[in-house]
Length: 286
Image 1 (cartoon, rainbow, N blue to C red):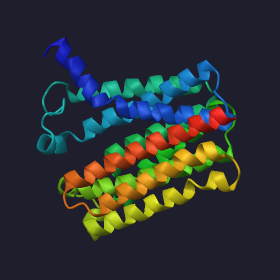
Image 2 (image 1 turned 135 degrees about the vertical axis):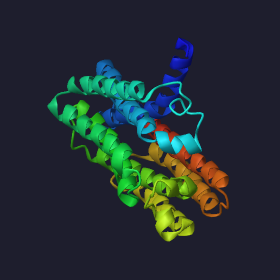
Image 3 (image 1 turned 90 degrees about the horizontal axis):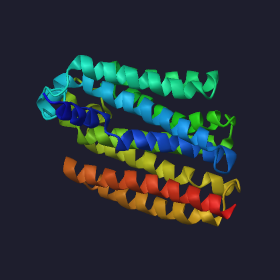
Image 4 (image 1 turned 135 degrees about the horizontal axis):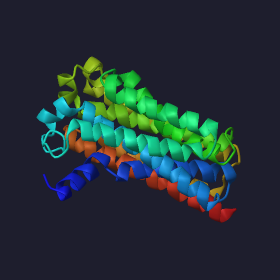
């Protein structure tokens, strides 16, 4: 196996676009807590912390999913033999250590919360992936916490605005996790998963997911009701809410996993771009 093959394998297990989203969530937490752009050092370290902790979780996921991937995704670096299990676990641990070192620069509270985030990701990959709703909750909570980590990094751990956005992210991710289980029911059955889709049926799982996305729409209106943000927030968030309703309708009406995943991608992009646009608009207006 060449060094180029190894490097390509590392990139595949890291999936940089997903850790980048976690890094952005930490940055958003910093900005929301301060109401303005934080110092560059805080932005850089915050992004690196979120990026590396999320990356570590994704890497160790491949380690624990090796046997399932031999069947469902034999082209992945581990089942394909591009990387060894020892190399993948060493990469995951090393990445986590660097992420925790970045968190330590913000103080013991940020370091402790970052350690909790990493442990939750590790526990999910190791034991909780097949735990159904409990596993879904672990992932959703870890996503919401990244916003709070950002507020802690800039010395504003109890910012109501940040906690509101953390709750929105938590509910949104929980809805995605439940819908994702409905799309992956066949593969999850092999690992003995107790997902809602397998326990209560695909249709029930999608209805619960749809209801949670509806709750997201309601939660996005809280900052408006409190007077935290004005029209610059309401316009992009209103568009995001309309897109969420549209793609939820597509999700509920999907007949195949491919159709469902396409609707879920639309939901993910709508949520990410909507929150980012509303944040930028609110900052410009201040």
